[in-house]
Amino acid sequence: MFSKRNLTVAGIIVMVVISITGLSVSGRRGYAFYGSGIAMVFAAPFQEITSRSLRFARDMWKHYFYLVSVSETNDALIRSLNDALEKSNRCKEIELSNFRLRSLLNFRRTVDVRVLAAEVISKDPSPWFKSIVIDKGKSDGLTKGMPVVVPQGIVGLIADVSYRYSTVLLIVDQNSAVDSLIQRTRARGILKGDGTACLFKYVLRKHDIKEGDTVISSGLDGVFPKGLVLGRVMEIIRSNSGIFQEVSVIPSVDFENLEELLVVVNVPRYTEKYDPAVSSQ
Image (cartoon, rainbow, N blue to C red):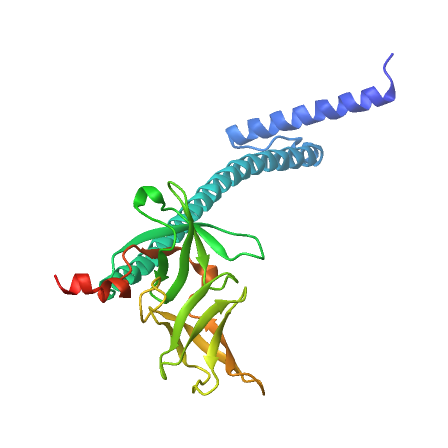
């Protein structure tokens, strides 16, 4: 009725049960069970497998919770680090902004004109025009032709105005022209934009101009206040013929990094300064 295989399995199970029972009884009563040696041979492998399985399950369970805890801690640390980096970046931006605004404030105290602070909100992407848009317009009292400056020098002038915004034509634009002087020798010319830099044109060949000379506004065009920096001489071109020399000028303003600037709202006019009717009053 029973196969040899079934009998063998049943015998092993019986021996294991007897051995475990005998070990338990001998352990409690303090003497050895007579079949403990034989039973140990059969029971030891099963006990070892059982013990290892239990230890493995225990360690896996323990490590799982440990890894879950470590993962949660790691996520919390990453979030804290990102928050700290974001705060650090905001503090850095505030520090840089405060530095620029302090420079503008100090510059306002040195010029004898009334100015209005504005912020650059966009730049013209066109390669043919060099202009920017600022966040001030007619509602702030701005009109066309008002000059725009920064502590480093002249930026340009307002070319178009809407109710809340204005377009500033930069001095490097090909349509820009500023009556200028070489600060060292007072040689006069017109500073015109060429798209990337400026050319100091219509200056007589007899005038002494050297590389590194500073170019400033003359104030004679009635647009820009006198004495504001425009740039420095980079190269001098003297042809064999003609009465003029052509001078390349590097603007003093970094137009790629403009963020805040000042609009001059009351440029002193020479016609007003020397008006006889005003002088007689």
